[in-house]
Length: 107
Length: 117
Image (cartoon, rainbow over all chains, first blue to last red; front, side, top):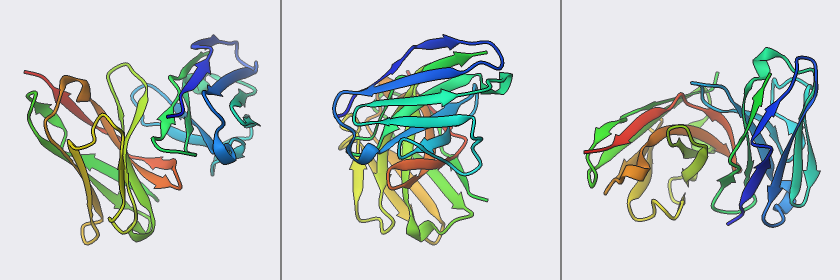
């Protein structure tokens, strides 16, 4: 099983700043099959990025995914109050599908 | 518009059973894997199970293997999760999600399952 560890657990940033979220895997994520999701309180998760760096339909270009192998990053630029949420990474290169524990972004 | 609508959650005693349903709208149900992902209160996301487009291939997380069973009904455009021998640690919101090659690209609103005496 691939274990994903996200850091930091909580990130406090000011409006307009940039947030950098990390996701580290316990082993190489094959084909960079790594996705990122945003979940706001009381809502279901929303897909942001897949394939490590491809934005999902309708996702603003303020959200940018990067990385390869076992180290991945989600960068959110021009942060606004609407970006306050939990962010999860997920690998889909092998079973079981696994998620990181999440990073809480506070604006 | 893609929509997934879950139902069937509720309060059940330890050792009991429950059947969750998920009805799909807005996409060709015959062409996609579908999955269940759960979230315990105040916790993160955990993939539970996925079923292939033809209903022949299923995968489960180890903790539910032999207790949970996935099935799908094409006429009803629905996915079902039969949960048996429920435990307290199965308490969670259960989300249905479209599973596109392992990426959960659309999610339902979730249904709450509470296992307690």
